[in-house]
Image (cartoon, rainbow, N blue to C red; front, side):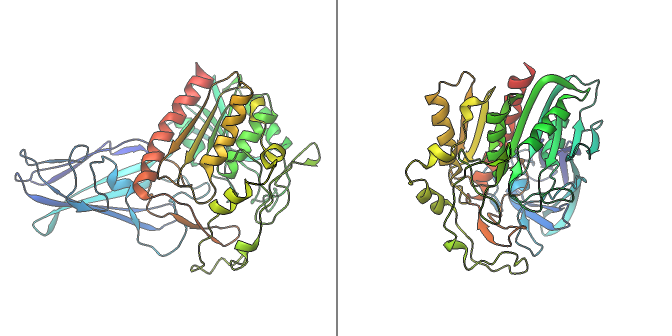
Amino acid sequence: MLRIDVEPAQALIDHEITTGISGLEPGQKVKLRAFMRDNQDRSWESQATFQANPTGSVDLSVDKPIQGTYDDVDSMGMFWSMVKKTEGTNPGVVRGNELKPMVMHFTAASDGSENASASLERIFCAPGVKRTEVRERGLVGTFFEPPGRGGVPGIVVVGGSVGGLTEARAALLASHGFTALALAYFGVAGLPKYLSEIPLEYFDTALQWLNSQESVIDGKLGVMGQSRGGELALLLGATFSSVRAVVAFVPSGIVHGGFPDDGPAWAYRDAPIPYISLDPTPFSNAPVGDRDAVTLTPVFLRELLIEALTQPDLTASTGIPVERTNGPILFISGEDDQMWPSFVLSEISVARLKAHHHPYSFEHLSYEGAGHGINIPYLPTTETSIKHPVDGRVYDLGGCPVKNAVANADSWKRMLRFFETALKQ
């Protein structure tokens, strides 16, 4: 009797799953399909055809598909290779603060009939994780605490130019034994509408608030951000000595302007922080706010920024003084990042740290063939452009699905180990 085994039946989003098929004749072909609706109610699907081994079974961790949405042996290939079936241009499956579980359904068909099925529930919060909305001292965030009596490090998690409040990473950090504050800083009620002159003091307030919580070990604070949030994480580490560890996904070691309009993005002590200003010409045919147009030609920021970096003394005037950071730093970049050259922009910071003989450890994880969307592992990576929800333009993120999937899985595991070493040991 044909059977699909998916273990465990419920698991964290970032947990690797064991999938197998049994009850076949040796050499018999079987088609495995997976279906999922994300928390934006969009439909995704993957499929792969296998040939049973001499025992009449298939193990996705050792067996290569004959054909399908992925090509090589990969226990999680059915997950990251899912293709979106619902219309729309925005990639990704996680939106804002929606953390409801996502259910994957599997079917197996042999000899032309579907005769086996299984399901898997994928969750963002481990059982016992406590979620608390934070609306005090001007902060807009969500606080996640792992089960137990507390006494663990705290991490502030910030998003990028999309704005709003994104809770998934913070929820997963709490599921791995940290306290985490998912912090919005623009794009929600009570905060600035756009990324423009955001005062760094706001984040200092968040760090102080986090440090005051009973579940947090005093003085054991880290920050983590992605894209513009990665730039921000580096800025916070360079500005506030309470930050003892920094993780920056696809960041920039120089300060960029506001978004969607040019002008200072950040301010400190009532003064704007110097920033790089880009030529707006490449954006002239992509009108701001045109959120209904889905056929706009993608904007490639990478070359624009690489050209800007040739300006004399640019990094000296706008470079982030990461050497002031009171702890270790982990940089994560994609070498095919088309949104901006995060590898080059990270290396600017690495060079500063080397030049100043930074007393703490620092590491740059760069991934060949990966783009700007390095994210939570085992989510679909098949879309490599985004229609930005703030300015309505389409941006190329770079990378290819399989390389992005490798970067996601490896960087996430190494990020968790980094925080374990930097803040717990």
